[in-house]
Length: 185
Image (tube, rainbow, N blue to C red; front, side, top):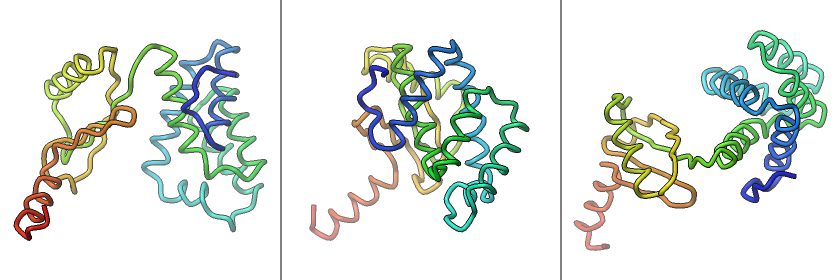
């Protein structure tokens, strides 16, 4: 088993197994690329998310749909077998969690810390570099920034590193101001 204890639950077990398989096959980075492609496909396709979650779609239909997608994406055999196993066991709904857990394990394996940065709009290259540099100073390790865009943030940033959350969003500041005006805070 791999050294990551953060991977718990069903998705953690599958991610750990995938990590160990990829490591023994010397395909850690290839599987990472596969999973990033798959994650992007999930994020951009309502139909694919439905295939992952719907209990009315048969195991065989899930397997056929995923096999076609994986062939189209050109992923490795290790990734195909893992997704096939998830289909066979009716566990395809955990795939997004498996992807996240695997990527976290790989980052830890490579001595990196992943920070999830959420902003209201896309950040410019200079802004990303500034955030990455500041996080590296605070964390004391190489930081991989996972950017998310959420217009509900309104402005500022929400940065999550491990279990720590730094919320400097305009939304949170407005919520605090509203509570202060009501006399709650």
